[in-house]
Length: 105
Image (cartoon, one colour):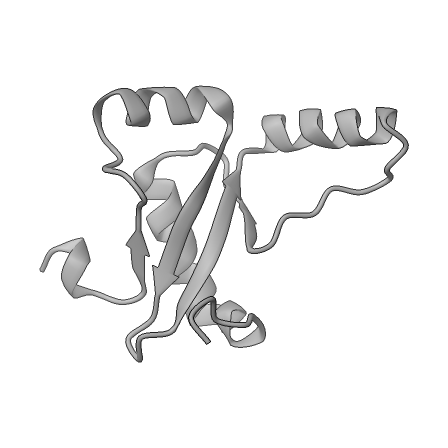
């Protein structure tokens, strides 16, 4: 069964291959992703790796903010397709999406 036949489904705004698959782990973040559940509910998610999250938090603190928040933020050890897919499946099993408002509501 392919990824497209299983839920939760991670929907990329662009194919996660080639240059994108190379550049995204270097940046340490990736947004514009949607998770679709079997009933059709969709949730926007934003992935960070710990290094980039720390850098962005430090930048916010230097600007006078004592926080960093992104809607649907998920932190994974490394930004790659496998890590992102594993994270959404685990979060789904834990009921994480039950506490979010669907983007398509």
